[in-house]
Image 1 (cartoon, one colour):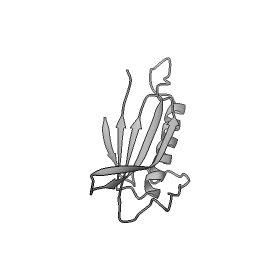
Image 2 (tube, rainbow, N blue to C red):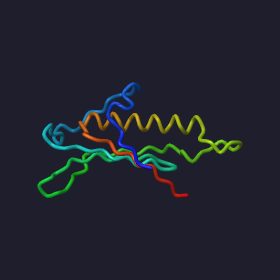
Image 3 (cartoon, rainbow, N blue to C red):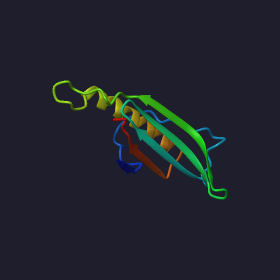
Length: 113
């Protein structure tokens, strides 16, 4: 499953804003963020696009262990705790993407099973 998250998608959720490295941040460069939402962890990478090559440089990464595979034994549904951990991790990812002025945030859900 893939979703293109807008920067405003979670903007009503409070969280601290991270500051990018001023040596790498360039207001004229294209920045993109990609999120992998897995069963046990959420990973994000922020990249600076170099269209002249074409290539990209990784400027920031985030990894959070969220254990989304932790399910209610009776229903098989995700637990409230697992969902809360995932939402907190996605908030941190969104803050990082905003701090780097990412044009797009692409999220992909993966599963080993």
